[in-house]
Length: 184
Image (tube, rainbow, N blue to C red; front, side, top):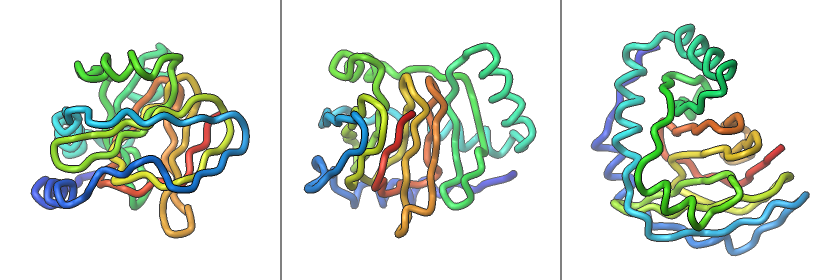
């Protein structure tokens, strides 16, 4: 599958957006808790650009083959998912950026991490435990599963869900407003 990436449009949308604070109203079912880590310097755009370049080269079959091999070998993967179709369009082994280590020092115990962005800044929301947590976070660009399979739900009726298997990271093809997180 070939995909064109309009980096200028995405960058403009990111710059025009503001970081979102913790949701004004949130509810939980299960034992999920959330913590916001604000003001992290953004460095995920380079990884997203690499994934967009790979989307031009990798076929859907190649992506699925890579994911199957990685799952068998327990190798964490970075995956680009088309937010309109839900199709995984590129995959590469994970390379944790430097800022991830600083986040991990605050987000101990391997929680899910939802990254939202505005301009050159990111905020990371750490979701611990299992169950369902609802609120509003965006513009989200990345979901890291942590220790459990994690799904970020978006769309006007929460009709879209991007799931990340434990240990994997899903990059969204364009920013989305996430309204529910489920972990199991």
